[in-house]
Image (cartoon, rainbow, N blue to C red; front, side, top):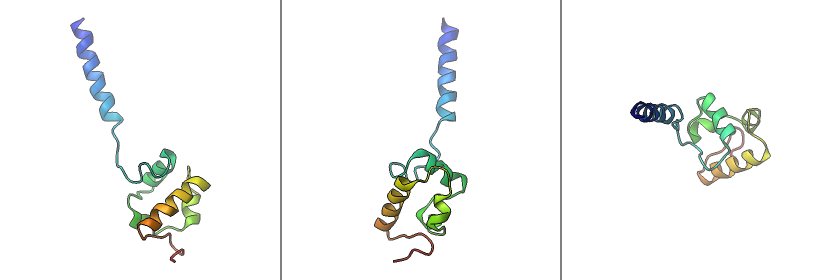
Length: 87
């Protein structure tokens, strides 16, 4: 019984480490698949995001109309814009 408790604690630690959040960029703004696509491209700030056009971002996995609209609004609130879209 003691061995099972020890194993459970070890497994819990391993699971917690392997599922740790890598960053909090755009959490609550856009869906997880879209955030993962940005992470894959090493886009982890609005400044880096502004180096891309809407067309380039839209081609990434997880970016449909809804995600793009939310992202566009969030960028505008922070005075950031996609490449070729400055207002």
